[in-house]
Image (cartoon, rainbow, N blue to C red; front, side, top):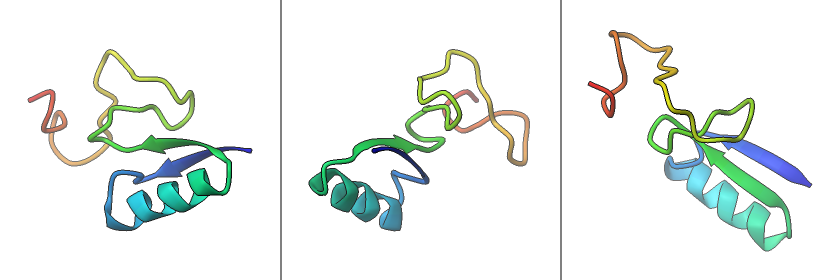
Length: 60
């Protein structure tokens, strides 16, 4: 099964990604730090930052 883990680079997300991969799932770890779009599963070119401030830390 294809699975997107929002927050996949965080403390719990990393563990969840690992467990899901061990179980044979196709996992995408989506987070601001990876730049992976949680809807499309692709790396975006432009900043999609939705948080406080104008841009994410990587784009600033």
